[in-house]
Structures are given as C-alpha cells and as structure tokens.
Image (cartoon, rainbow, N blue to C red):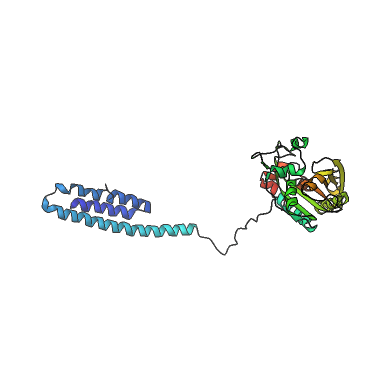
Length: 331
C-alpha cells in the first residue's frame, strides 16, 4: 500500500508542476499508461498473499481514479490559459482600417481584344467564336489552298490527327459562316492561332489574330480601305493613314498587305498591320454564292501587334511571360 501512496504523491506533484497540456500527456503515459508506474503495480498482484490482493487492487484503482481526475482538472485549467494566450496573440483591433484589397485588371491583350470587338461591333459586324482545334478542310481546303501550294509551307502547323490541326489562322471561320449564313452578312472573330515558328522577339508559335469579312452586293476595295481606315483611326487616333500594297494570299483576289502611319506613334514610318483583299471567287462559288451578284472583302491582323505599336513594346514574348512588372503598366 505504501508503494501505491508513494507513486500517487509523485504523480500529484508532477501534475501540479506541469505547465503545458503536452507535459500532462507525457505524465499520463508515465503513470497511467499500459506500462505506467501505477498500472504496472497490478502485474505483481499475483505474488501477494490471497487476503491482500483485493485491498491492493482496490487501492491501485482508487489512486488511478484520483490521478485521472487530477489530470482532467489540470488539463482544463491549462487549456483555458493556452487559449487565452492564443486569443491575445491573435487579437485584432476591428476599429483599425483594413488592408487594401489589390484589384485585378485585365491583361493588356484582353484590353486590346475588347476594344477590337467594340469597334467592329459598332460597324455592324457580328462576332463569332470558332474552334482552336480546327478541321483541315476549314483551315486550308475551304480557303483555296491546293494541297501542294507553296503557301502551305508558311503555315506548317501542329497536327493532332490527319484531319485536325491547331488552327493557323482565324480565317478558318469563313467556311463555317458560308455554310450556315446566306449573304449579305458581316462577321469577325478573335482568337489564338498556332504555327510552327521559332520563338524570338517578333515571332511566336502562339499568337492572337483578328479576322474580319463581309459579303454583299457591290463590295469593292474601296469598302475594304474605308473599313480599315475607320478601324485604324479608332485604335490609333484620327491622324492615321492606311496604305495598300499588292500581295498574295490564296483566299483573296486581288490581295494586299496594308500598313498604317501616324506622326504621333511612329514618327511618320509605315508599319504593316496584316493582309487583306477581296474574297476569292473560288471560295464564294464553293458555297453556292452567286459571284455575279455578290462580292466580299476579308482581312486579318495580329492582336499583339496593336499594343506593341501603341505602347512601344519591342518584344512579343513579354505578353505571355506573366511578369507583373510588365503587365502592371497597362491599367
């Protein structure tokens, strides 16, 4: 019995001196665990005289009960203190002004795309979505590309299957519109395009493109130049001028490249924006459109080229590198 009392006193002193709940858990294992000092006394009960076994077992169990109660009380006390210390450490003054929330902003390319959509929408062009994973027939066949044409070399692209490619140009939308819409109509799209290009300051395998086209009676190069002039003035200012020079694209005839010039941005230099022309009669006839009655124009341009010229950006890669120091300039 004296051994039980001795262990109980030692446990009481240790429990009273504990300052953390972690220490109490260690003491519980030390005294009351499966191999604890008090629990371990029960292993020797078989060596006691028969008349002492029951009183000894009762003494051990009573001591265990008292220590368990003491541990519970001490744990409750320490937890309340720990919580108070934690609450104090985490206390905030709700009357202080809050931290400002950093507002997000649109990517400079998205800002440019939104402006493009607004300008063409205000001119009566209808916006269309088109798939980035495109059928070969819409990306090439529908645009008057013969299989062995040299122009195909300039658009070596990413083939998913023999019949599916990542679109090389948003002009692929034309066939889809011609199939479902009877003229007259005005349409445009904006999206990502992909080509097998080496990445450098002015080239990338992934870029954004605008494609615009319309079909109606009597559409001429004058309508094309007027539309491009209105678009250029809306994007770059009222002093901009538009220039056409002959060029070749399989889906237009005649074809031109067009450039703009404005003293404010380029010091009077001509800067090429894209390619354009009248929709090739072969394409219109392919979709059953009467070329004696209807004609149309089409043009495309790279989206990245617009903010590059407007803001003096000299490296195309900046737009897709997610550097906040660069992107933060375009609020």
